[in-house]
Length: 75
Image (cartoon, rainbow, N blue to C red; front, side, top):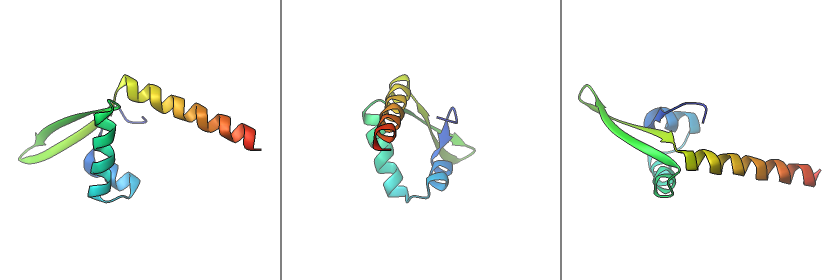
């Protein structure tokens, strides 16, 4: 959520995962409406970027709240 959108290769580098692993997770996020996928070209090279949706942002924030709640009650 730090970036408005991020391309596949940059995301792969940031997360240090394989192409297949990242693609699998991104497909799941897209199927659940958490991210939007944009496919295009830069010159002749394909470029796929991903952006979080409103539903994705809401789910992510809810996840953070749940994690904070767990941390508070495990201390």
